Image 1 (cartoon, rainbow, N blue to C red):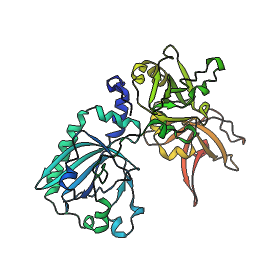
Image 2: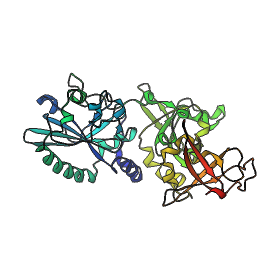
Image 3: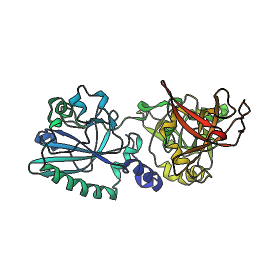
Image 4: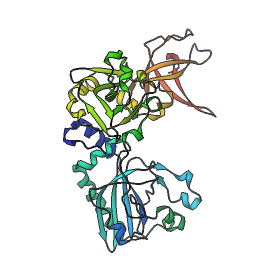
Length: 401
């Protein structure tokens, strides 16, 4: 894996990563029996990676085993439907995505029992920040976890968590092969390349990305084409009007070892590419010093722009994702219903306001075919409507608010 000077990363970039990692942390436990040799492989501050899904439970009681993994996470997924039995479902199983990474925050011992505290890191390239950065909140978290561990260590185990099937699901070490060797924690950039058209906007916005053959999207003349550095390093962001965009920071390529090489030949330029122009070009998230060195450009292009106050909150509403335009995440397709509408009509609207009561208002982008008293530019309330087969997004004309 390439190295980078994390001290060059902008403070706002590190804060964004922290704000997606720490708020809403819950404790999920996975009890097992480790040998002395297995337990000795864990060291505070190290980063480990599992090779599969990691199952745990939010039901925290006493321990019937010698060791407990306490996983601190804000994005474990309900796995109750995957449980084989009613008893299994009663364990309240939760799971990570496949091959998660964790940072070992602490190792606690009491009465012959050991708890290994793991912080669930981001599933994208920003996990690397935790290899080099200490967050003050970690010590506060450990104080709370320590008190909870000493309380629970003396408690009785939860009966369902002593069932053979659950114990089997939780057995073994996390992050190490049967030989004791640590599992690889990183992947080279080439292995992670994916078509930009296959990614949702959250995989690009807020991320530094390498775009393979990205200069094709610049529509350069043959004389301007750089065969040595044909790729681009860019920072993704969402513009309320222009949609998903990339601020171009530097030229780049992958060397023969699939390591990223960056060339600073674009420092005197301010270039923006809209995501639609990338077509099926492939990209992957990366971390590189160039983000810090060109932070001023990123801040100017991505942050110093006028947008509705609640636009970030609207972008976080995943229930809207099926209705979003791929290249314009703030634009949604809805059915226009209400007075003057004989047949529900598909229209495009731009998300504008999220009220204190969580009502969503969006601005109509196209003139309805039916005369219904609303026009392009009008703000309309949106609502979700459940049918027997699906969920619809509807925009309601004024007379039906």
